[in-house]
Length: 206
Length: 213
Image (cartoon, rainbow over all chains, first blue to last red; front, side):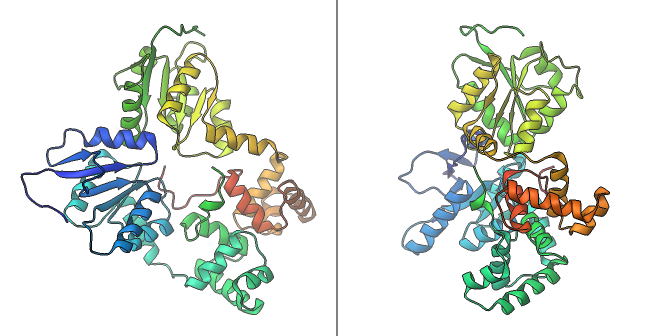
């Protein structure tokens, strides 16, 4: 899997959906002594630096193929800074998560850290994740209800969609508002969007 | 405005607060025929050496307003902003202070080069994603400034009574505004209005945890 021979340079593949970031990564990886950027898709790279969607897809492919094939480690570079996304990626098997605003030092640090077999999360995100641990966590069901609220559905509609009683939805909504320390449903949705507790991205026009 | 001969090189500079984006933009523009990438430098240096500066949102706004160095809308370089924010509000603001072009991540290298050439020629340029979004917004009735105030209150989770108190109007007036907003946005609940507004970038959601200053 990972060749730790000091003689051969480690191979890093860049696969990013954004042309500017792709070009930036290639420029940043030129002239490094301990690793090289590679375009050779045939030979597995030690590390793939990629966008969010590609990272999740590669991680899923890795899970499906099991231990039969050599795996590349995965470092996501994205503007997607929501807690929900970071969790999703790390839980899915991605090794590093960096934001596009990162400095070049932080980028190279991330590449080397992940190549060493460790995990890497940018310092900004790490601070935010630590912050979130001090708050009460929503249950899976509460998150589903919150996502429904975010689409503007009323209690009755939420109940119908989730196949539960309206009274149960009300209980969930009260629990959510109490955990988020808000007094209205609308405020709950606003707070959830800010903290990235729910994923609204698929409804946003691009 | 100095007319630009298409046979001439476009002198282009990059001033972006995200190092990786700056590096990528430079690599793309450097590889482009008919462009002369200027060495990195301060806004003052680029102002003297460039026809077009590709910059981040805040730098673009500050430059166009003359907040950093004296800026002339006629003789200073044209500004093409590259930013993550695709909200209507930001695009309008950028164009209204005098920026010429607006591109967002996901824009291809060819499109960025096209944008630089277009603004160099004195045209306005919006990347396809932004143009699409603005076209979308034109199909909706625009909110009045007061309706926007009320919508901002709703997004902050305020009830009618609180909004009324903050804006110094009666609760009945707030209700009327809320109804008008919901009608214009074709939604049937306050919460959905807030969601749609956040998606279209109609209100600035207070970013208590924003990672991008």
